[in-house]
Image 1 (cartoon, one colour):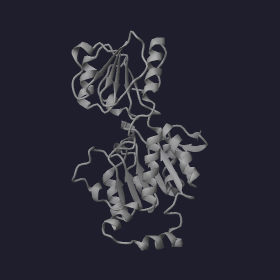
Image 2 (cartoon, rainbow, N blue to C red):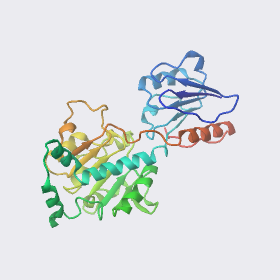
Image 3 (cartoon, rainbow, N blue to C red):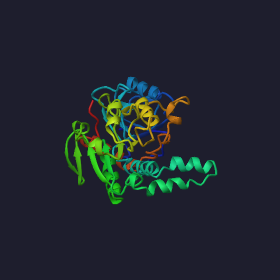
Image 4 (cartoon, rainbow, N blue to C red):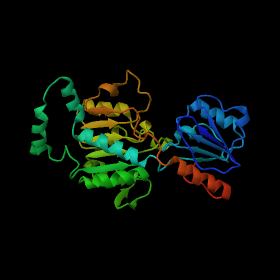
Length: 316
């Protein structure tokens, strides 16, 4: 079996003596002598390189992306008989940590405190606002209603931590039920007078980039949130209508935003998000480095050899 490993990450999966393991440069076309590969592993590959691989690597059996979101690989046009698998589970811990950091940064108004620090100003007024009975519950997770939209494996790591800090967590997914002790509702339960959004203090998006999720968090759904609510996005930028978000922030109809992802990346210098009030931005760094990538690859290779289904296959 010939396996192509990207040069963007140090991978060392255990393979068999008769396997051919080749490290390839993601910013260059795969050399002609390796277009007979069985497995292509992708991490931080440019779109053009993936599209070229989809055209030229005609013997592929598996494309394994190490990213939690497989949208870039899905858009490359690999043949229907090539299994495309995501990096589900590889980023659960780091993304959950980053999501928690953004939630706390937003609730504790670290954006405001950073601005005061730059001005060498002691913002004692923030303490008075926190103590005001009228703002009870707006600066803490203790007693807050947190809604996580996109309740997969990352949410499974994040929800218990939020719960330990006193939050009441509700998940949103395609199928309702109870997962990991968390009540999960469907998209139809979000809006309306009795909808989940009406009582949401913090909305965390872990939505992937698909046609169905494009601008799922739009002006209407932002308007359904309380005016003190915090919106956090660590999924994909396309799930959030950024123009509607900026308008809500500027007009005081939303408490704040904390975003690790944006619809265009890198975020253009003239984007209004940079100067949106009560907003924290990080440059798509939540995932960081895949955790346990070698073990996943070993499991996938073993499944291919045995003629068994591989894990994390993405529906196309």
